Length: 131
Image (cartoon, rainbow, N blue to C red):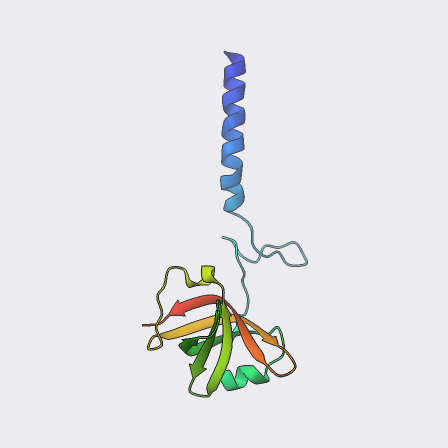
């Protein structure tokens, strides 16, 4: 009977440990202080910009654009347009999150700029269809 109780307690400890671990986490500053109580990032968001502004930003900058995806030009490559111009964006299949978007739908894209010698592309990490 004692062995069964110990085994049951051990199983409960193993099962509940991931639950407790999932409730904590996130960014911890240099002093060891947690910056978020429920996990995740607590700090400035990506810069909101237009296509024209994004083209002038540094490589690897995080940016949020609002406008329309007007054309598919490759497997995961699209043309994005706002009032200031067009930019190529790369959207991995998993980033759509089941959303269907047409050229008439306004979207908010957040991602990281990838600048080459003569081209700028946004590597999209989040797609939001706006109402």
